[in-house]
Image (tube, rainbow, N blue to C red; front, side):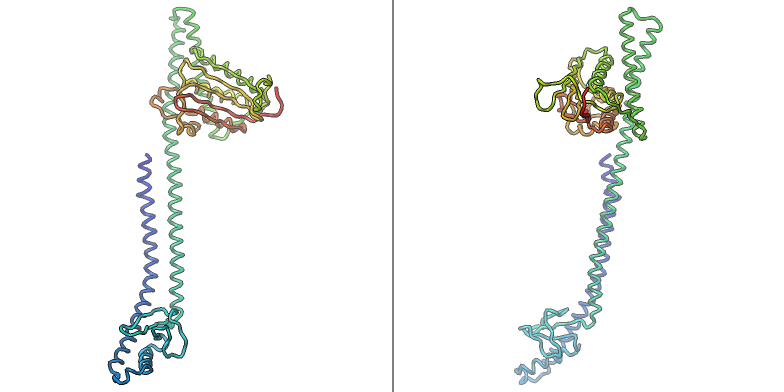
Length: 415
């Protein structure tokens, strides 16, 4: 897809814009060159006529007078008088010959040395408005070049922005398509289990009471999975429409976390995974001996925080093998309460760590379709944390597990 977008951008935007800028500049430059070329041709013709007049006069002059320097200069000046005040002659020292006005060689609009003679023909423009037109052409060239360059960059900038927006929409469309595929897969699994075990219980084909209890537990667990998935989708839908509201109350965050961990243990009743809860109310001073049993007050929506922690726990469960424990740390850091969920799973690659909080995104892996998940859990965790004035962070290393932390602002009081 990226290669197609790049080719599309080059063929439809970059090349036409470059050609537009090139031919626009060429057109403006040609207009300026035409004026300059016309004036130069005029000056060269005038200098050529004066030089020819001088050579004709020299060929017709008596030899005995050619040794007289004054005669030489008068003859040269008379040759230049063909164009009256438009042409002057200068000697090798830059001194003007004859003439009623004082001119400088460096002020001439055109100069040309006379062949085989130590004199220079200087042409001056008698109509200043032509020079003014030429200068306006030069200034206009700079202005038009600026306009063309600005237009080219505006087209490129707008095109890049449009392509970026389209690319984002295409990527979101692809992710939504994958989300629908994963969602249908995730719904099918628990529904199949619920239907199968409920049919067995209904038809009384279960061999023992122990098996009945096991099947009831599986049905309950799969129902919890469906409930969590449905809540995630509903919350995400409300967030997308801007209708998600939070019932903010002062809560004992340790109670919320403890109840969530207990609920998660029931959620994974058929597994033997250990879930360890550590509650630490010590300050950043490092004096752990002075740890208090109280914890700072957190103003939050208990249901939303429960759902966020459940999403982190289920994520840790999905990407960790059954024998590895999950650790939940609830601690105080200055004026913040931190809920940290640490697993010993496969970890997250560095390039994926920023993306995991994007909606519909699932980290790249070979068996991604084999792991349940809609790609909404971590996005909802991030939204919930930020809606409470906090943030969510991740520390992970490929193959060495992950640590997700929900950081929430805490009040001064304690429970």
